Image (cartoon, rainbow, N blue to C red):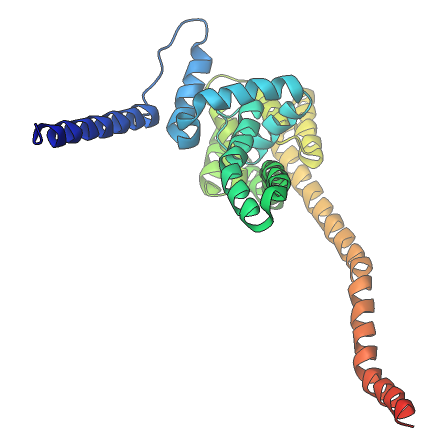
Length: 303
């Protein structure tokens, strides 16, 4: 009897370990979900999202629950987050509500660590600080998305004039628009500008018109300068203006705007440097006059 219990205990431990590993394997597996005719597009999107995001694959029910809550309580923010996901170059399988749920989920997963550290340092009052840190984590992840989208837009606008110049040269040399766009995308394949125009090329290859493909580009980036440029190209094409001339004109416009933006930043630099300059001058005065002032004060006390 004494020999049976260790064997039974070992068997139960082994079965428990097997069940745990199998559960983790099934949870983390990226197998495609079953499809039906009514929601085929959404199922395909979720399958791709499960493949590229281990976090979504592991906590999919919780992400879906948080996404439904976000769509209900943040209806104005969700479209803006969707646009920023596109502008930041993140996988387009994320919806705005799901990406916000991802940020919230990361904050929730970090919450126990915050509670442990804050309670250890401050006692029960640390629960308030842990709650604040959890909310701040979700907010910072949300701001990081906005900053990433803004930076990528700036990088695109810096390189866009060169891409338009290349399109102009290729079309003036006799290439069609599709051939010129394909060569330009290949040349800028490692740059966000090439990625965005690569999507334009893919949409044109699937049968979209130039106007619709450029409208999709404008909707994805949603930047004032790019919106103006794309709008001018669409209008010029509708009026029959040669595309090479349009691209050359818009490249010049982009360079002028970049020069104006640099002049604006240079003009603001003087105002921004005013406060540090005053602080440095005050510190210099204190360092120079401080010893004399201290000597004068102490000499009066000695007398």
